Length: 230
Image (cartoon, rainbow, N blue to C red; front, side):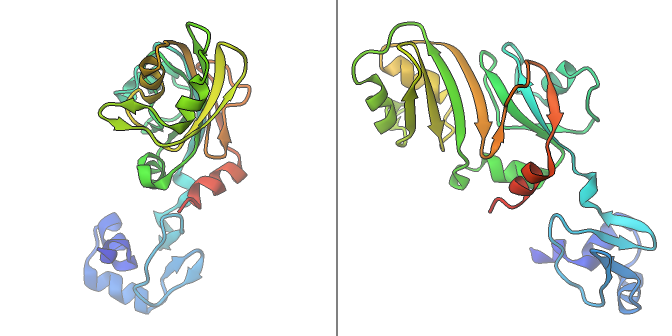
């Protein structure tokens, strides 16, 4: 349905003017794509600027991007659970990307960019996510090998992943998969319990030194990385 991403459709939908009026404006060079006059009903990319008579039809500057350290105890099932926790630190109308269960903490992306949401959550994108895990009991022999090679949970074997020990109770794990409570279920299947789970990275975006319930705007390089995800 490429017509929904073309100039005429976007202008008509945004400004509520007629199709004929929009075609005439396009023919007269009154519509600008990335600040250049455009005369054809071209496709418009998700991050291109489109304007007509000093009105923005689409402005990439309207998108906002934040890294947020979700604390333990905050529920991710409703957007309000995140935005209420932020106490007005960010504009309304944003949502989180990269769900964490209530007992876990760590990095979430907070944005109003729906294109990004689809890129991050779809399994075929294989966006790497890095976690720090603390266990209740010491790791048994071959625990990390079994985690890395895949564990049977929810009736299927998890995909191979990268696992590295920190000490006898703690390890990091890199996943490109996102099954429900995957790390907790994997550890339980191998006879151990997760007592602390913290996501520290999504793709090239790192949690860094953010404290729990703090957020920061993403820098230009991070935004560029997210927008260029295929």
